[in-house]
Length: 253
Ligand code: PGA
Image (cartoon, rainbow, N blue to C red; front, side):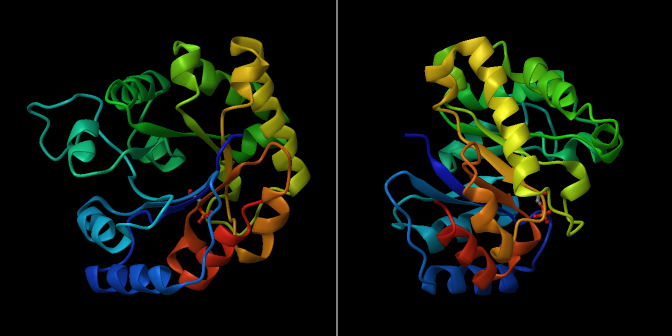
């Protein structure tokens, strides 16, 4: 059975004191994770040691990074590598969030390198894809997302692709309060899975977790997550509120 994942993306938010308070509230909250369920916290890089300490010994709870550099080490001032993250206990790394694609000009080719670097050391990329509003309005989102997958992931072997988590995040729904309907989410998630089926076969495609992201909150998580091809969510704004994110974890089907 593929994993159901509730992933928090704090982005560049919270002071140290606020981060500590939020983690304390989450640790104290009543969330329940089944054997095939995970909660993942992608906190700002400097709060990773704090999050690791607070969430230690919580079964199926992981701390993630929001980004990494594609090289293992070297003269890349200001950057952090996947192996450095792994060395402190972080094995999940978000790759290709639309904000990184847009504000840091991350290309499909660069993201392929990052995915390779993460998989090479046995860590897990959470690979983001998703279309802008203009593409959705032109109803060409399937081809757009398929190209993102092809360009950054389809060089991988079947053994490698099953280690990648996909996060489909329509850009028009991120931070806008405008969520894709559960039917829209299911439609494109099914399409994404069909792309993996065409390339790797059904058995492989059925092992890949595909998360939905874009204004997921406590009030809509259950319906979105109940769609057959939606395996959880990548959550921005609502992950900064303990009661919201706890409810989202509990909405995993
Ligand atoms: P949002 O962000 O939940 O605030 O829309 C999601 C994301 O960007 O991962």
